[in-house]
Length: 288
Ligand code: SAM
Image 1 (cartoon, rainbow, N blue to C red):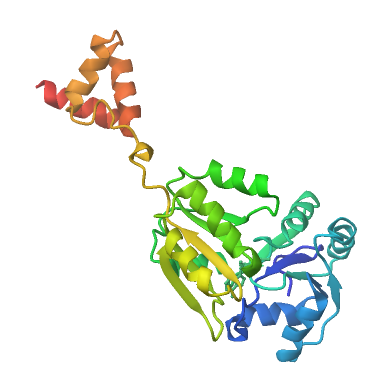
Image 2 (cartoon, rainbow, N blue to C red):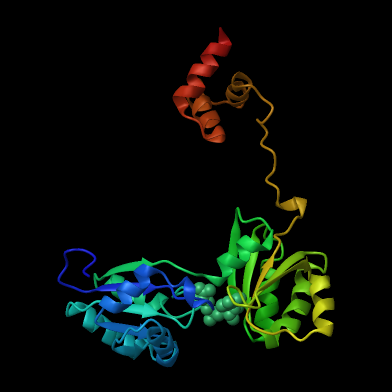
């Protein structure tokens, strides 16, 4: 079971299903079977998972409200050489769930931490959204505090990355209205509901379109909201002054500005993210 030859135990961060029990990995079950203790966000919830797979194991609760004392207890077990698995109610630990503090505490105590990868609602919503998955920002849950929620949205309204939010059904309508104020009603949105479950649904529309849909239908189930990044041209990087210059022209511009040939080559190489030697060679080739 031991991850490496180590007299301390290993902390395994185990991802569990976000709705469909079939998504649990073989390795996750093997780890849950093998550890001395499972630290669960909600022991009753994890017990259902363990019962389903016929695993009997000691459980201890580890959640937002007991993480300080429980974190120390779990670290004590690990220091005694016992392996511990940490699971949240669903999905990947530490992603809008407990885990982050325990990882930090283990690192401080020189304890090996490893992960058993698996479902993350936000990433599955992103890949199903039809929006750009090249660069994205995970925003998690918005605050319940109205002012903080609006400030949060305002601070990212020009972000060009695809934005991922978690949201509870009873807050969805207010959130969509707040998003309209910050991002505008035309912004594309995908609402991913009940992922991996029987009633999985992905609604791909605009913020205005989503507001219309939910003015007639009550939101139900768990949601991830994926929002297109800002398309404002102001987010495009400024074209570089040297973009249309040859390497010789680029280097000579710096020489005309007063740099030595060596420094001009260095500056041009830095602008272009190229090696000095390549710029030097090209410059001298062009001089011939
Ligand atoms: N750790 C989890 C993960 O890896 O995605 C997230 C836990 S967070 C407390 C719960 C939120 O995740 C829900 O409110 C919802 O926004 C999202 N979520 C979890 N399961 C989901 C599902 N099956 N479909 C859509 N969203 C889900």
